[in-house]
Structure formats: C-alpha cells, structure tokens
Length: 253
Image 1: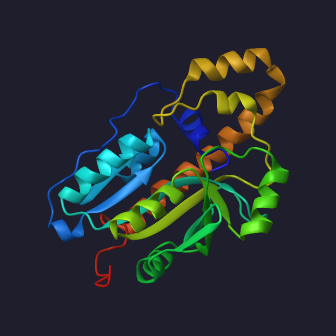
Image 2: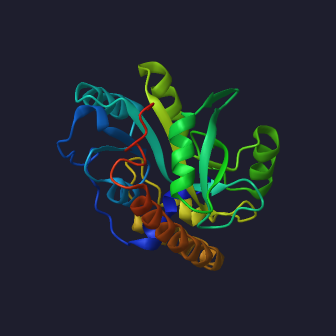
C-alpha cells in the first residue's frame, strides 16, 4: 500500500491497540479462513464466524499466529484491506482481486476458483496483479514506475506475506484490496508519521508533524476524504463476501 495505514486515523481518531488475533467462532475446521490485515479497523471489518484474523505487527508475531491458526485447521488465507493505487485508472473505493501477487522478482498466482468467486461477489471489481512491499510508496513517479514494471494495479504491505505463507504451508490463498490513495496522489509526510507497527495510529505523531509542516493540511484532508470512501467500500465488500470470504460453496479450495 502506498499509504493504506492512514485510513485508521482519518476514519476513526483513537489510539486503541487491538489484539493481534481477533476472536474465532467455532465452525467446522475445513471452513476456517485466515485473514491477514495491516490495520486495526481492517481487522474489525474482517472479523466474523469462521474467520481467524491476524493484524500484522512483526513477522515473528504473524508466524506465531499462523501456527496457531493451522493447529485449528485453517487451510486457506486471504489478504484483505486497503491499498495504494498504481494503475492510473483506479480511484478510491475501487476493488482489485489479485490474479497474482508480486513479491520482488517473484510472482505467485492466487487460487483461481476462489478468486473468480470473489470477482462474482463484488460487482465492478477488477482482476489484476497486486504488489506487496515492506515499506510505503508515497511518490507518484515511484508508483507509476512500479505499475509499468510489474503490471500491478495496487500495492500493499501484507499481500506478499500472504503469498509466502501460502507457499510455505501449502495453503490456498487470495488477495482482495480496495484503493485508498490513487496513483497520482502524493502522501503527506504527516500521514506516514502516524503509522504504528502494530496497525494502530499515533494521532500525537501526526499532529506533531502537522505543526512542523502546516502546508500538509490540505493533503491530509484530501487523504481523509479518500480514506472515508475506501472504508465504506471495504465494509460493503465484506458484507457481500459473506462469513467465509467467498469460500462457502467453493469445493476446490
């Protein structure tokens, strides 16, 4: 994501840190699905019966949570949440269902049957590669370059981890992301300052950076508006996907 993490500031101003793992409701083990997210508000939206939600903190923490999920019988994993736009035609609130996940020089195909089911369930969604990276991209030129080099429609900071985990543990995987900042948007430094490793937001850090650079205010307001649109799209898609993120009735996953 180019600046997906700012969504938690713009849509809900709090500094509560959610648990890394959201409560899992008992269901038949073959229908558990792991949802890996990067933000506290994404975790709350993703949670539901049959879903084991992991909010990224550290790779070690994610690995421990994955181990626990596998012990419970989870055999499928999805990357879910907001992402930064790379393709120039994508706007805030647009949905991308991954055909593959780009991780550096590697490209891993998502589960075809599951992804096609998700595409059917979210009207207007597009099927494109999604890129995963370890740090945010904020410059429009860098976004354009990544799109040209990879063909990816969006970029986030979790999908490549999902692809790696799926390959390591033999899991079916999918990735579905909603655009928050379009490719042409410059992300203010003040927004990045509020990002916490646990998926929460430091409002104090955002305000401190804004005081130091008040010219960033208009950019922050624009980003807040985009984040509102992305959050509403995320909530709508979660309802459309149902309790199992589209897994129900997909016998091959």
